[in-house]
Length: 572
Image (cartoon, rainbow, N blue to C red; front, side):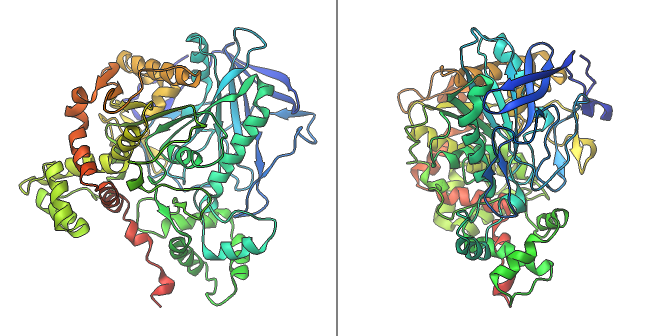
């Protein structure tokens, strides 16, 4: 195994490769024969296993036929295609190579697949192993279950080393304009079609279909369908929160950096503003019927549809969960009383120290103290803004650098830490954590090319899951490796139905597990963690019943939401 120094552009490509890669043929009862890999003699991996088929754009996926019809032996060595997506403008993580398998392309209609990685050894052949299902993040517009940095091979191997053998599954689902488009036209057309039940949230329903497939078929891979833990980061965490309001398709859940409202929640009518801009762009008449508009838009090539993500001067467009009545969706202000379902036997919730840096683009956070106070007054009004100013000790003499740091901290609170904190307080027995290990990666990727890592020295959004999967381990120093081992063991312990650390209960047991910095991983009281987290600021917001207002301010400052809802059809 070799690695490169991440202090140079060449270090972008990390060769954390298995020492041995052997083809493997296996028969799975009820499914058929499949070719996969035996990696380092420790884990077996079977990729591109289809769980659903998409009949046409903006339609519910249907289950795949089983056993694998028309295939004597299914090729599960290569990864399946991702959903088409725009190029990520910036990603602060080194690239990972996997030359022993393919680099998947994208395909709008063949992207519903999952990858299964299993430890070779287990205590007995009859023992069914617990299962962890990864739902990737990426703001509902980017990412894939086949991403190299969240390959399940290291985590599955570590599960054996820790005597916590666990099957790791990663899934892909529809994204962006293909997975999260909603509008009144779709409602009219799909409700008129007796075959179609859904009108929005296609990507979330894809995930639900994948979880049903896992319940039905994981026993063929040696997994226990009654011991399924879902874990996800950012949009993946939002997804899990959404699923917690639906049917019981898993048993435990880990929410990493995000409740359902993180990427935004919109009504069908609000989605119409996006839809009208898109149909105008493609020259589709406003005066034709909904059926004609939908038919025309379904004919637009996928690569051209990606233009939808460039039609808005905002952070990430077309990534909102649509509140169309599928399940109950909780607004930020409801997390103080949000009760988690009794069918889910365990919940873990956490966030990163510097989450807010994610939204600091185009200098949106560059405000002096005076400008920040004015911004709060304009959005919240004088009375409410005074409470926030007091809670965060904002003074008018703060310079721009100080103001920028404070806004970033307030965004971390409003969109991540505060909803999590409210949720944990409302639900005794939740396992609560924070991730504080800063990045030392010198380089990331910007517009597909090597670029200096602008988020270096921060425990930024989406860094924590890299420590759980441990694929980037060769680029970590010894202290970071300790953090990675501690997180992997904790996640696996939880998935095996055990306590990774004492759970939090307020006010009797207000504890939180903190991972990092400097490889230090331990349980802290909230008083001990106060200098870093500023729970006192969050408490002042909650006591003033400003959770919804403060989170709304954070959403507007971070995502420029009001600009999204400017409907061109209503202004002409």
